[in-house]
Length: 230
Image (cartoon, rainbow, N blue to C red; front, top):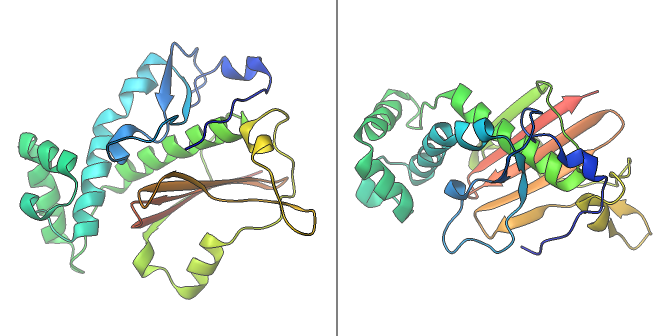
């Protein structure tokens, strides 16, 4: 993806994007475990403290493996698509057994996921995307953490999730969101989706007077939305 330099207030980079502590490191958002090699150039990075930089790795591994098993409809390693996930589950028998049990215990034939771990990873991504695009940090608990397989969306849910609208509130001056402003034929600024890797990961950030919304599509399988109401 094309990298855009931010010209927003440098003081906005003195906090970890996830917790607000002093940032000794920088963290990819999304994490590389959610993407495929070769990785896109100029992946988004945000300031991160040491604890947050490493503190999500176990949950991200679970999340990536669960998404792969759910999207493929199996925990049979030979039938999975991503080579990196095959290697992980071959190496990590405990995680593999956990996912096999989750698949077997779901009465609808899907994956009975550990919701708290999914929410933790999605919230991390949402915090990172808000910071990267708008140069803003948001540390409060969101009012909504929602995710659902794309194939199971109702017509109304699909219409709402994929819709884009006129931008009501201008982004932070100098932020990447300001540089990405898309002006339609009527001269109005419009929101839009940002593609990190084709058919693997894209996201959408919307901020208005009343709400902040981050939407993600992961591996063309999972639709996700995190929202903060002001």
